[in-house]
Length: 335
Image (cartoon, rainbow, N blue to C red; front, side, top):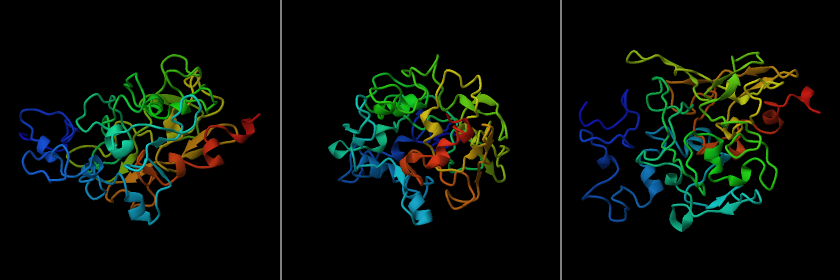
């Protein structure tokens, strides 16, 4: 339809791209003659973060920041802090320690546009994730999440969302640097044979299990319970659920020559499932109700879909303590 502003079945950019002579998107954010006196770039607020939160404050955009605290009464344990720091954990490629970076906010602090391009330019290729949107009972769609191809100190653009996207800032967490880290599948990792796996293409359990088999598939897609609308099925094209967070042992042919990607440990807090002592994986059912706002249904798994903005677990981990390690390393197989 003419003057389309928001989401439709063929255009998932909303006001953040796909600009045409027949659209009217620019004025969703920019006011040519009536912007507030203290605003920047003709935006509705004094800072980029405040501008983003005009929509993405949890009231209309299903929460980027603040949802976990609002719903549970407890502050999130992990997340990326906006406008408060320029210190990057694991940002020093030489030592593996923290370093400072000059981000886009006041005083070089991290802000939304350091990771996202609000105009949808020079962004990664689309992928299916877990994040629910306003029309949560429509199928999950492949979008680029407006993620920039270049982040942090990266000099080589990243086309596919995966470990190398994270390493743009967290360069000290890459495999086989000066300090030893848990292996991560990436372009420069000595553990990786051929092209590295990414969030959209990685070995996951072939079924919820019990199974010792894997298939190559994206990690995203959670079954959504509710009535479909407009003739659409309620589920995405594939529902990987929690099958990407367990690695059967012995490793399968798909896994040989590769390490896990960052997002197999770092994602929304959830109940992943478990490996048997023999290394056979059983994934916990992943489901999101479509008739409640994000986080209100306690049984949702994951309950919140705010990664990498904030999570219930510390350091953005899907699970914590040995529960995390045992998702890939069954006790009976330890040396």
